[in-house]
Image (cartoon, rainbow, N blue to C red):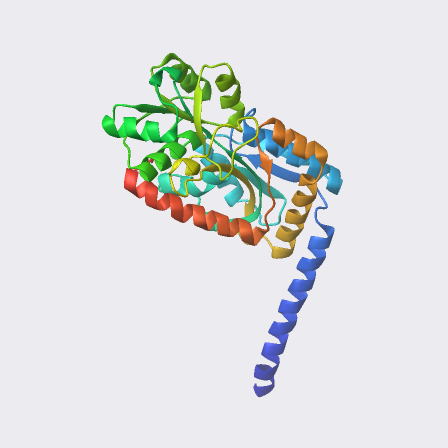
Length: 327
């Protein structure tokens, strides 16, 4: 019995070492079959577009098919829940917006079907600022004038978005909170309808992606008064950032991440991160991202996890303050 007790820790240590060797070998061979890339939204949007670019490059780099599948529904929850339940072997991943990933478990607390702990971050790989626009007839030329007007008539100005908890909605809520202003939220079923009503003057304010805003600004149909990034953006170089105009530390960027199910072995996660960074290095990828208004970024799994945690904390406070709950 004494001998058995002495041998037990040795056996356990050998088992752990053997498991590590097996996982390392699996990572070296990974991938040995097709990859499944889930997009939790309908085809045609920016998340779908960049997933297809990344999928194409992963297929080229690995020699294995990377099949992009759209699993829309419930604001991204259907596809996310599917990946959360998948086998943690690296062969099923999700391309998602960082805001959607961090926000949905908070605002769909009862019905999202998953939690942040159900995922392991692989990479953050793209980002895009937004443009604060107003109807040209509003008589507002910069951010401080908008703040002054909003404060002079609390609730008298309205802002449009493509729906509850969308990027434009949350950018506006962050702006309201940062400037202590009160504007009425008018949600639409999509960007096109919201733009139409700002141009017509039914709604006065809206945050849009550069690729949506720029042609409308150039045509004089919308007026851009600020950008949400830390620096000015190409194509709208004459438009100062919101932070430049006195709203201290204001930053809002749409960013995109790749995740796999929790408990996916670290060597496989690191291998995927390496492959994705290689995919980002190609001129084709960079041009494709640029065409839809995205900047390429690179992040390790640890850096991506840290970003997710920081964003979760940031939005948790604001969600509670505004009472945003969609269950």
